[in-house]
Amino acid sequence: MTWLLWTVHILALVVFAALAVGLFSRTAAILAFPLAVSYVHRVTPGAYFGLDKVNCMLAMYLLLGRAGRATRSTGSASFATATATTRPIARRPTWPSG
Image (cartoon, rainbow, N blue to C red):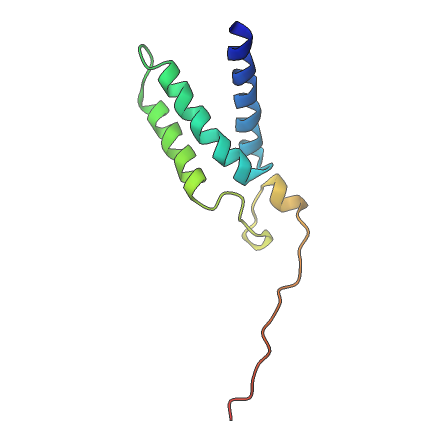
């Protein structure tokens, strides 16, 4: 069972790194929350400090918020934002007001 623990640990590190860089932000945020909570529950008997609570709170904020929805105009340093292609905004036709 040690191999399963290491597999989940490596997967969690990859997900957290992808979220930190901004690669697949929405998917990484969805995966990061249960992984962060499982880390907290894994080490609860001896090392449950305030930072663990803050990490889970921030992971939930990214899960429920708009992770990865920044635009180029905000100057975001996200990898996904920097490599995204921009499409022109479709405009509604304007009708005469008279």
